[in-house]
Image 1 (cartoon, rainbow, N blue to C red):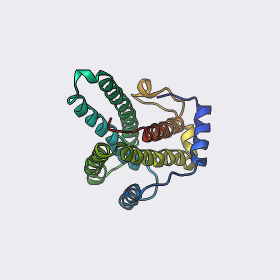
Image 2 (image 1 turned 60 degrees about the horizontal axis):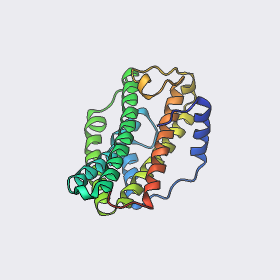
Image 3 (image 1 turned 120 degrees about the vertical axis):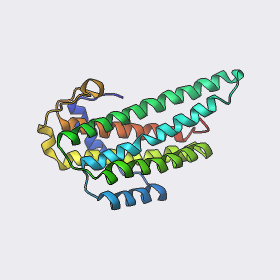
Image 4 (image 1 turned 90 degrees about the horizontal axis):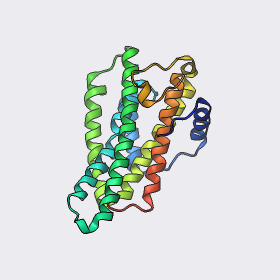
Length: 219
């Protein structure tokens, strides 16, 4: 994932917030309605952590389906096997990127000693992720474009939430970014830039999913 300069990140923040929101289907609309009902409409570090737990799920599901497909092809289909494996690598890279987001958010909430309910911020996110995984997996098996569109809508929402959060909290621009994951994720000068980068990453994931829709078929 490309790491942007602070100047570019501010530009991408403005671009994201100026874009028209995607038209979400009933499934995504219901998900975010229930999500806000449980966790509240206010944006927070803890709420973002839950989003990141769920955000990894579609990439895990696509990777799983691709591995199953590889075990059911023959040598004569070598080109097809390579395309599948390329899809596996792509899904793994996207999944790893989401994992870095989660680790950074987890680290920050721990440093700030933010108190979180075990049920709502440990147990329930895993339950949500489990069901979201099943939905993403089934959609991908029956019609990959449906799963890609679902993920694109999720990432569109996430990108906007992160960029709006930075706008709501200008004090983040004065907080230096210090992290055990700095060398892995990026050496950003401020915490605001890190959040903007995460928002940008989510928008890139959205575009990657949208690009797959037109040509999507079983892996």
